[in-house]
Length: 504
Ligand SMILES: *[C@@H]1O[C@H](CO)[C@@H](O)[C@H](O)[C@H]1NC(C)=O
Ligand SMILES: *[C@@H]1O[C@H](CO)[C@@H](O)[C@H](O)[C@H]1NC(C)=O
Ligand SMILES: *[C@@H]1O[C@H](CO)[C@@H](O)[C@H](O)[C@H]1NC(C)=O
Ligand SMILES: *[C@@H]1O[C@H](CO)[C@@H](O)[C@H](O)[C@H]1NC(C)=O
Ligand SMILES: *[C@@H]1O[C@H](CO)[C@@H](O)[C@H](O)[C@H]1NC(C)=O
Image (tube, rainbow, N blue to C red; front, side, top):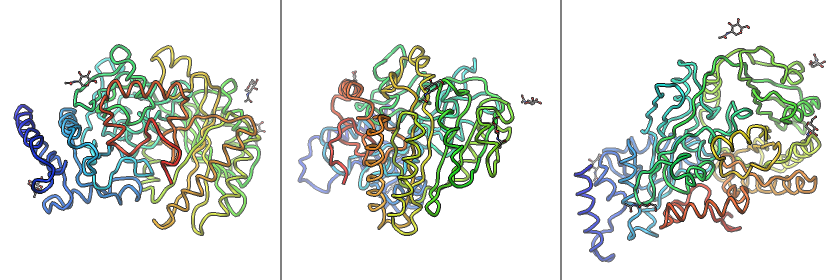
């Protein structure tokens, strides 16, 4: 590192003295490869052509894999990330297109939030440290891990953490966006299980953010996406976890009994909070099928909270299993996202409104391009029950949910078959979200909360956290990132200030 610092200082000194018009432009990727050497994989370098290509194709969807950065930087330590940001934050690189950058952990976001054309993609996937504390109460997780890797290790020790339910989702994105988990009913969102973040700030300084130091940053990062720094390591609360019950359930077309079951299930004063469901409805020839992924966090066959859903089903794979097996199975079932388009909104638990939304999705699906899958809806409870506990134990998060009741998160999923249809599908999805949220307002069940990890590029989840939360996030960003590097030089992800019309 000492040698690198000397080289860096000399290099930056020479840059600072150079007039812009002199000689060939020195790109940020050149500067980065001088310091980080083989950890920088540049476009057009014959030696590393295959690595460049392979890295590009590790994204979940085609839209992200089609993006062509000038280089990938693949740090293996937080010091490498620090060196990278010390270069990218140089004043002469502001507003230089090739110095704009993206930050990528697992690369599962359907739209290219973690990829950048012509710029620098910081790919954290080599940062896969995984350390279980001796007292088994916490684990340290490098930001490049995917949940499947974390769970494979923890499961052998009868431990778990609040994390993603798909093994192929990255740790960094899920946790900085909130994170739905198998254990949400009792433990809140996955970000609520974070004990400490290790963060590299825009000036390259490495800091910790936890309930004792940098507490404002600690809270902001829980939901605040990539707006404050690059998180290189998360320390997560670990807990004892044995076998669970879970699997998939399929229902006949338009079975109304499942709707009333779901509404009771999503009511935190009626439900068993060890349960989890992703209840989905799929348009089918003007009708809809329903089904879902269910889990119950205990070794209990056929738990009563699911009985009305389970005992009327056509087909079920639910059995005694482990949360790791479910996560691995989910990953195997969805290795590539194709040209998936996701968007989301939330509403206050209400059966009549749910029916309205399902009918609206079926209707809008009929107007979508031929061969598009239409709009599939996945409903998930976001119970108020665990929030008081989370607030007391960790000071809460930046999601603006503290005063809200039981919500339902709706993942609206579609996709196109070819690039030429991407915009059409996005616009159809935008139209659907506008209509659905208007109907929610009319029905008095509107919620501003937009779950960031399902949000489309045209949505503004930070605004959905509420104005005072947003103002707080902006204050934290100005404190830890005074040059506003993460607002100005990182176009991907969800920014703190967004104007209507930023997306067309
Ligand atoms: C291409 O990449 C290799 C491996 O990192 C490096 O040694 C070499 O200097 C690069 N070539 C150019 C022209 O940058
Ligand atoms: C949830 O259940 C409680 C207790 O039965 C009931 O009072 C409340 O109205 C229910 N909430 C909704 C949204 O149905
Ligand atoms: C799970 O429950 C069954 C039935 O009660 C019991 O036989 C089995 O030993 C339990 N398994 C574990 C791992 O606790
Ligand atoms: C399903 O279980 C519920 C609750 O135990 C019961 O009321 C209902 O009759 C059952 N339905 C069927 C088809 O078995
Ligand atoms: C880096 O930025 C942080 C936050 O603004 C500041 O506290 C720290 O002193 C800075 N470090 C250096 C070396 O300038």
